[in-house]
Length: 344
Ligand code: A3P
Image (cartoon, rainbow, N blue to C red):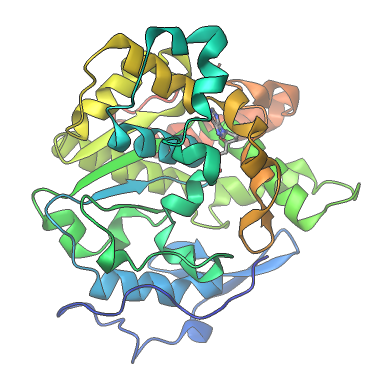
């Protein structure tokens, strides 16, 4: 899917206790599976990854030193990562110069202000996904020389995060997830566009559901990924904010205020909140030139991050049997955890 250019994850760092450091670790000895008849994935620490991502993940885990004011965003793929990145960029830039007249009809003009980072670059450029930085199409800043507070992102499961991100009292984690059925449909569209472009038949949906439910897909199992962060966020709510895509859609202003407060950047006015919500909206982002063209990751067009963004889109695709298969898997995984992901 993407072309490796060599790791750009910072290698300066300190001691670590994990055995799987760069010297002893052999990716080609890990269990392998074929994903969608299109690419190899391998199993590391109980989860599945594109093989090229494993060494960067190991390096991140074993060398990264968190700062007291770092913000780590985390998510399974296709659950609202791009949206979360855009929101955090805007919130950390706050206060945004604002006039009341900027909201509504004049908002589009205001959005082209020089201060609007989203009009210049795709959100994935400014908040890179650490383990995939090797696939970046443009040079990116060295994480260690980025001014504080540093914002970065990962799709990695909680269990393989660097200890320092878990233990540094000030380092905050924001996790976003989404109901499994819409996540699966979003993944299906995304990988069809990458692996089967130009009118090729889409991958059979029943087989995609099988992969998803068995957990044999990139960063899978999805359900374990979500559950780990959920349980951790319940234990340490001031450390980990757990967001749900559907709640952001339903109550964007309330959720964005919650996010800003968690990041220590509360809004001073309703106008500021409205402006951030609008600037980060799907309809606006997908129509920006920077997102219509180009790509931040090799082989992945920027436009592929923006599709329908609807809650309940799965109803247009899943048969009752496939719906039931996902529901059953979700129930067995989440039972007793208190976690509920609304799906329509
Ligand atoms: P759909 O495929 O259901 O449309 P990720 O960013 O984790 O890859 O997730 C992609 C999903 O988030 C896609 O969902 C995409 O349309 C949706 N999305 C992207 N930007 C969004 C935004 N600003 N607001 C709401 N949804 C957004």
